[in-house]
Length: 262
Ligand code: 2AM
Ligand code: CA
Ligand code: CA
Ligand code: CA
Image (cartoon, rainbow, N blue to C red; front, side, top):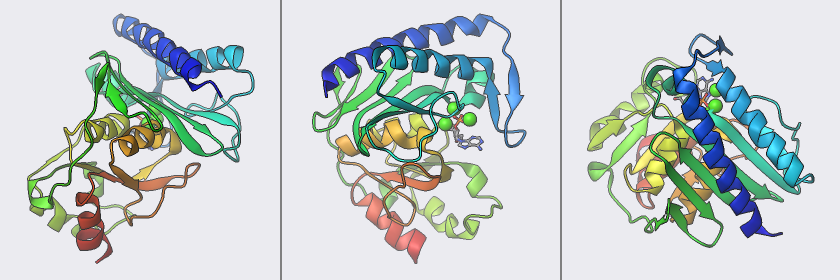
């Protein structure tokens, strides 16, 4: 498999898709809801996914695509080369803020993550990684993550999980939120994973993500020595919804053992 060629294509397509997204800032969006009134999709999400699928199918006809908006293939197993794509991660931010969103792509071969990308379009920051070759933001290598303790950590979490929800008793999160140095919430799982990889956040935790939300970030974070599991410390199921805990080494273990499992 020629990963250098695939990498070159992915980067070129990301840049072109990013420019197209920026052009839409001056246009009227078509906004629809999906599962509930907070779950949004626009014509730009759909067009961006179609843009990638068209290029991938023309250039690499054997490759398969799993995309959030459903224009890709029906993927039941990760054999062969599979692109897992979130055309816009942080759609609500895209609509309301015109920032704090990203294109996220993870490319897997026989279930093993090979190339990961998170493109912060507005800031023109491309986080990327190739398995075994380190991670980068644009041309700058990202240093390996060093351990940090809960008391010195800034963690990102989605505040809907701190209020009532069916997944976790919010009172279990309160001690963690109190113990850390600070909390943040950016509204883009992909960017939050990129920020952990870049050391801007020490951890990111959420109760339910789909494969396209974490596929790119998983490859990038692991490449700098970060730990990516569900909140119980178990490996992520790549084709299912998972809770997700992304953190620096040490911190990850401390959060799971002292605050989640108990
Ligand atoms: P999206 O913008 O691609 O939908 C928002 O906190 C983060 O959670 C975003 O990364 C968002 O991705 C993701 N997310 C996953 N499932 C979601 C859902 N059902 N509704 C809204 N956001 C969701
Ligand atoms: Ca969505
Ligand atoms: Ca997403
Ligand atoms: Ca999306």
